[in-house]
Length: 386
Image (cartoon, rainbow, N blue to C red; front, top):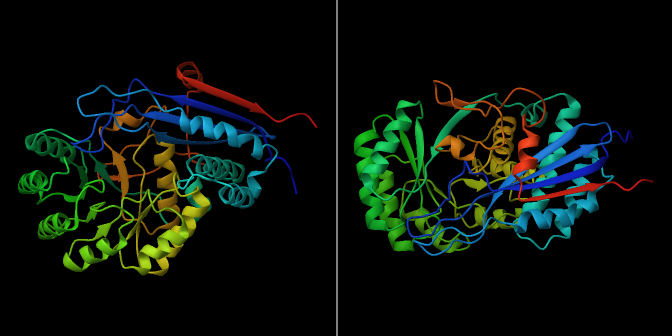
C-alpha cells in the first residue's frame, strides 16, 4: 500500500475569536466564551486534512461576565495526536476504532476531530468534495436559521422578520426555557410570520414532562417541524410518554447519548421521532455514517448538530448531502458570529438553500497566518525520523 497519505505532522490551534460574542444556551444561563479548536494534519505527500470543533467551559452565573476560553479540548487532542503519527488516511476506520475503544470521553470530542480530518484528507487525495466521496445524494439543501437567545418577545418577532427578508424559510428558536414565557413567544412569532416560515423550538433539556406536553401541543397546533430537547436526553421513558401525548415530532438534544448502542436503545424505546447527532461528538464521520444508516433502517431522518464554527458546520453539511436522509442544515445566525475560519464562507441562496464551498474535501479555505497569530494555544507535532 502506498504510504503517501501517512501523517507526518499535526498542528493544533485554539482560538477565542474576537468576532464571536459570548453565548448563552437559555435565558436562564450565564454567557460562555466560545473556543474554536482546529486540527491540521499533514500527509507525507503534502496534502492536509483539517477539522475543527467548538467548545466552551461551563456557564457562569447569569449576570456575571463569561469566564476563560476552553483549553480542555485542545490539550486532550494534543495528548492523542502522537498515537496517530505515521497512520494513513486510508486506514481511518482502523484508527478510529482504536481511538474510540480506548477513549474515556463519552462524547469523543478529540477523537471525532481526528476522524474528520482523515476523511478530509482522503477526499482531497481523491480530488473530490467530501459529500461526493460519501455518496453524493445532493449538492445543496434547505438551511434553517438557528437563533441566539433574546430577552424580549418583540426581539424574536423582529429578528425572525429579518431572517425571512433574507431568504430563510425555517428557524429554530432558542429561548428562555420558561414554559409560560416560551408559549407567549411562540404565539407572537407564529402570528407575525407563521404564514411564511416553519419553526422548531429547542429548550435545552430544561422542561419536565407536564410542561413539555403542554408546550408540545401548542407547537403541533402551529405545525412546528420539531420539538428539540424538551427533556433530559437520558429520560427515555419520559420521551416515549411525550411522543404518545403530542403530535409534533420530538428530537433529543443529541449530544448526551452518542454511541450506537445508546441510539439503538432510544429508537427501541420509541423515545424520538427522528434522530439527532453529529460527527463532531459521535466519534467522527465514520461513526456518524453508521448512526445515519441505523436511522434510515427505521425510516427516520437525522438532523445533524452543526451549531458552531465552519469546520463543524461543513462536516455536517457534507454528511447530509452525501448520505441524503437529512431534511435541513443548521445555520447559526447571525452568520458572522461563527465565520471566523473561512475566507469565503457559504451562505444561503435566494431559495434558502446552502451548498458547500467548491473544491476537494471539506472545502476549508483558511488563513493560517491569522489563525497562528491569534491562537492562545498552539501545538506542533512532527513524526520522528525513522
